[in-house]
Amino acid sequence: MSEVNITLTVNGEKRHVSVAPGLSVLNMLRDKLDLTGAKLVCGEGECGACTVIVDGTSVNSCLMYAVELDGREVTTVEGLQTSEKLDPVQQAFVDKGAIQCGYCTPGMVMQTTHLLKQTGKPTEEQIRRGLEGNVCRCTGYTKIFEAVNQAAEG
Ligand code: FES
Ligand code: FES
Image (cartoon, rainbow, N blue to C red; front, side, top):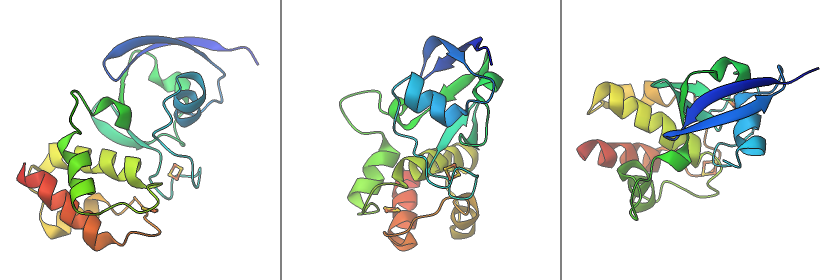
């Protein structure tokens, strides 16, 4: 099937990409743009490892077609860090030991970034609800929730 040309903004940079109609956003980011932060785990919207932000909303990039991104803006975990220092959410995950294998971490960080943009200082309940679509198999959620709280403190 022939490819479609799309133009989008990725991490603040205008990109032109040729994509097959059935290509997912996740596979476009990883295979066409070499942005491998977002991870493929379940591939069916159940784990959140592929979370990125599209026009200010967090999405499971494994479930979205790349052709839907024409004219839109995407932020991936690679786009958070703007200086030599880690972004505050990334730093909080390091400080609190909220990472073991790291496979879920980019998705957790992106979902946390989205949550904090929406709520500022979330309650415990809002953190649990906000991250309920993101699965971690090894760290344990206590450290992750501590990291979210640290990031919320600013
Ligand atoms: S890989 Fe997309 S939700 Fe699991
Ligand atoms: S750190 Fe291993 S899955 Fe979360």
